[in-house]
Figure 1 (cartoon, rainbow, N blue to C red):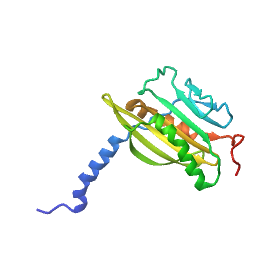
Figure 2: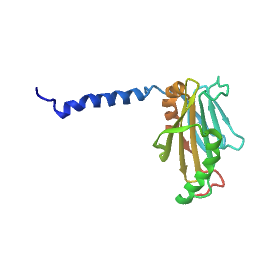
Figure 3: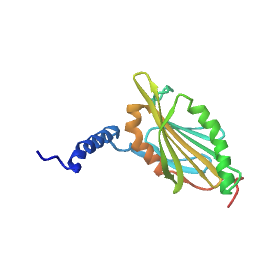
Figure 4: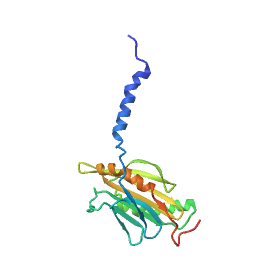
Length: 194
């Protein structure tokens, strides 16, 4: 009896790998309808889901975006937009300063129980950005989300979204649309000019 060629013996393995990858990829879905939001300080604009609440911290460093029925539990959808002025436009010093500015924000909202499950790169307002998907066990499911960090001349910016896994998977296209529509308007007074 003739033996099958190597190409055909590998086919079931390749099919299995493709099926496993497809099972791990959530449906792309559609983004929620969005409306334009402008930072009260005039630093940036972005699109937020229609009807969502936007609460800015008194110092303007943190914008919290939540659905109208948000009650404050850890498993509910929430987007945090962190922005801080940096004191330099020198690329090497800028990244170092941005890293120091991100640290308190990350410690406040991502505890040690979260694990990075994926990382990569993306763009925010045409600038290169780091992307991290994270998760931690929660009841019978997981809390999952995405962190995107970018350092642009004059600013350190971070976008942090999270929710229970099924809610987050369905919201991910909206999170991507929010990032795609983010635009810095100008450097605030006191920010170093290039």
